[in-house]
Length: 285
Length: 217
Image: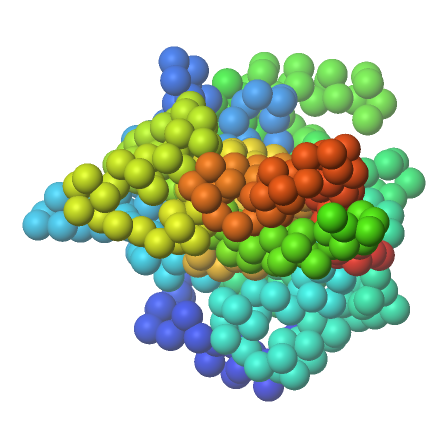
């Protein structure tokens, strides 16, 4: 269903407006770096000091019990949630802050807008635009944000919708699609923006069990292309084990354990992770 | 003496013309004000929120008739003399704009939070979020209450009679003074004419609603 992005398209990638001057040769530099990040909602501290790095193209699965703060972790990267303390770097540049007279200050919308062009996100509840058909959902941001012409945007959208297996649904409205189809449109919509990092926030949690497979299949094929770093916040343990380069287990606002899928799932070290995995298995999920 | 009630129609229609002109322009003003004040109340800046809240509370909290008197009879004493038509349009437009702003505000708030988040994830600029994604969805929710308000507005234009504008109600009253024995017929005609105008308008709003929701909800 998915084919690798060709050389031509890669060259085009660097011409995307809004990304000029923003492309730094990454080499081995992390694409994402959390340093001492905390997040509080009122009195409730959901993240209690996160240090985390992701390499370009790396697939990182984030697992943990609900309420562990893993969704908040992803939402901060998408600039939907502001860190209370600490900093996040994206492609070597501060995401939420700028330096002013040697002081670290909260960045304005202009800075956030420039930084955001590197990140995309897929949501649990799809969040498709109900007043636009499938094609328009996918072309809206390339046209309005990247400044592509209608023809360029549609070409890009049609090819991406083809990759997720929805080439025949261009004129349909979201309300006439199944959950799995909606989520695949949402994936195409985020992919046409060509981010360097994509956050997948429990993207199969709202789906009927029989529709989970088709969405995971699409994500698997994106992962195989390998160019985009992916943060997979998920409850699908088997899936995490299969496609992640690294698995992070978080609980009560901290990273408790991290390692390769084999280390995490076959040789869990901490008691917290052992009991979490046991509960998961005994529930048969 | 008129031969039948038909003879009243030309005079009443002349009045209806004024009624429609006042209703048309004050509805446009009310619509613009509704959006400006409704979005103003959702502004990030407290000064804009406060100013619009004060406007809304003042115009909702006092009677339209008093506002009309104020614009037409009181303003000249501080050196501002408005033509009748302008005073009428301003009073009705600002009054209904205050109510309308609450419709806009609540419709925008009713758009699911996920829609805002999707616009951020796609890196839209704040005005693009509002204009391309939020308002098109909110507008659909606004249509039925706006339709209601429009009918209410048309009927309330009869208050301009009190600043002696020659609208539908005014003409009916003149006719009644001249032909007192025809009072019943004249007032039935007056009711009917408001009813026809209001019905046509609500029908148009419903058609618009159906057209806008076609195929997508």
